[in-house]
Image (cartoon, rainbow, N blue to C red; front, side, top):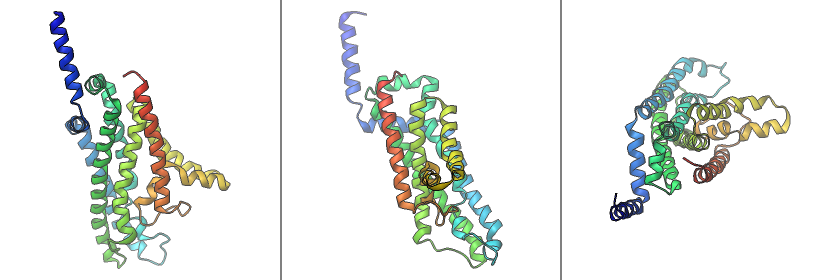
Amino acid sequence: MSTAATTAVAVATEDTVARQGFPQVLNAEWIKLRSVRSTWWTIAALVGLGAGLTIVMCWGNADWLASADADESPGAFITWGMMIAQITAIVLGVLAVTSEYGTGMIRATFAAVPRRGRVLAAKSLLVAGLLFVVGTATALIGYFGGNYFLDREGIGMALEGDVLRSMYGSGLYMAGLGLLAVAVGTLLRHTAAAITITIAVCFVVSNMVALIPGDFGLFLERVMPGNAGAVIATPVSFNPNLLDPWPSFAIFAGQIAVLMTLAAVSLRRRDA
């Protein structure tokens, strides 16, 4: 290739890169996210588990919850399925990042968008936005389906106050888990490792720390990500030791912010 041709290609490449503003990056990442079947299978699983299990649990426990023997509030069951559906939010967040590392496509992405922080921001915004909308909608489907059976026993709950907060709170929690997974996926760059570690920390370790005696154990129980984030997604928590919804969610948001900062630094310093 002649020197003139090489110079022309270089100038054209620089011009293309210069035009890669955040809206263009966001659009490109949205195309990638919606173009893979795993995204839609994961969303379908979130809706099926989140709404389906809530309805089943309310149907199966309505008689008991209405009886004098009940030691749980109906509010603890009206978003029950979201406790299982949260796994799908982690899977979606991890795959949004690690699938590109697995195929090597991430090199082409960074060649087109040298400012890697824009790529991370676009992925994070899309994952969080999608999970917030789907998570909230799923919680509402579960509420209307499950509350039908509670209403028949005279213990139905109005869509207001803590119940209403748990609906959009479910969306916030799913979005937060997605961001947490994006950060871990960016740090580890390996699908199986990122999914396993995030699930283990959020669900297994979060429950096991309750076995630690004393105030230190209580502190750990309250600040573990799976516990701190989940409180906002239910009108009445099964665990009375946890903090109130908004202070608890603030802790969860702080943990996400720290991990996202580490992920951004790692993305800039490491080779693709």
